[in-house]
Image (cartoon, rainbow, N blue to C red):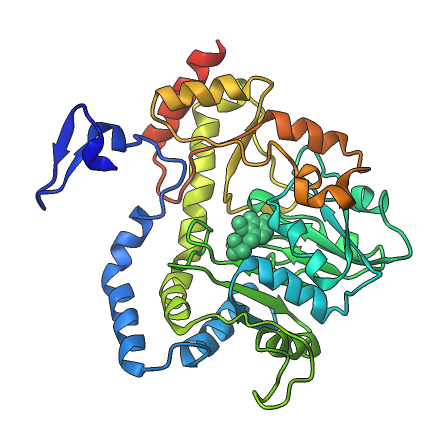
Length: 384
Ligand SMILES: Cc1ncc(COP(=O)(O)O)c(C=O)c1O
């Protein structure tokens, strides 16, 4: 509780007092500042939904689906409740079910794997490329079997996995693009590269709602129609229930708020890329291993993840300097207790190494050159 914190205090014009300790000079994320110029438009969007009286799956959701699909260059987008259910629903739309195997990287947010068992299929964990943090045709091929029904290619941290090369292995690819809204590659945007793709609009994502939200995108009209049914109890007309589905709908308020933000996504993505450039300019690459864009990719870095053998020391020093940082995947998905049944036998040396050596440092569309220099200064004084 703020009131309970002792030490120096700052008093705002509003009269609110906060402890100096509540401030991070360089936060890991900044989900607040980029939205400030949009406050009036966001309030107008909320008002408009309020007065419309339509709150779930209405005109705002339909308009957002059209606009998001057009932005990605995908044929269809279907709004759902979150990025985890988006994966389960997309897998079911692909016909994944009991007896099937789905390949998924272990170096990812746990939800990429957690979304598989609800289909009845078995997660099979694969390794990733040490330079891009993404799956490759080789890491996938190493664990493929005749039962492989789908491959989840996670565009981790906003980097772009080689989806078309993996799809050439002959199995449909589901792009988990939760972290990659705003990224680009020579072959198109994540979300329009494979058979089907999923997004999360959790508030800290590159395109974030003010609550939960997600989407499934595809160029295949039949798959899109199936996803539309699966998100609404397996029904196309709300009267006949043909499939055992989900209640996984995007609401009007979130869609309206996302519509205000979508036109800014490219600017914000440029801001993220510029921030990565400030780190390089300040000499961060002399101290730690920097993330590499995959060949032909322009990532909208969702997280800026560095590698070093002493990341725990770096994290402690950044904490002292009140600079945000986080080890995200120290226990990779295949070693999580809930995945024991499927993950125990997996041998994933690159994942094991990355789990010990990665650290996300501050990144946002508004991270300044000065802030980047401050972060690099703190890292330099720890490691030198
Ligand atoms: C790679 C990845 N996949 C899936 C998800 C799940 O999205 P949500 O939190 O919207 O369910 C996330 C979100 O954190 C993610 O980062």
